[in-house]
Length: 118
Image (cartoon, rainbow, N blue to C red; front, side, top):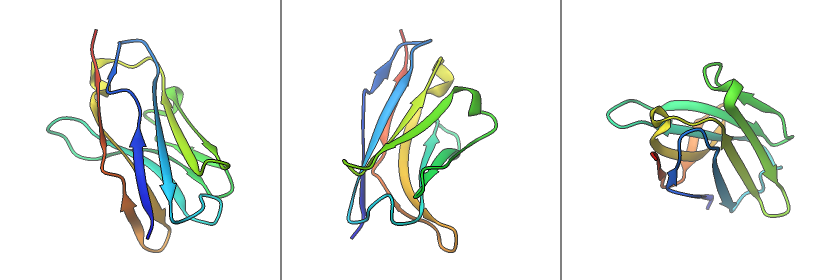
């Protein structure tokens, strides 16, 4: 059974960098799939942020690309999101997920609330 768990600060100040980690169990992040970050702002729909592949390649949303970096620590089976220069518009519930090219999103973390406020 594959499980994902997000962790990181729940409050970030404007202009700072948001950093979240997803810890994966039950599947090595080097053994296939696209390891994704998605967010949902209050009263809005889901927004794809980007992903890192099993081989370490990264792909980002065009609207967030200039501020986004996704990396991984294979020794810990974790992947990390960094979003720089945050504003209150980056306030959202952030999810990590495992995605298959054939099946779409397979498992999600429970989500973590991040609020950007001074």
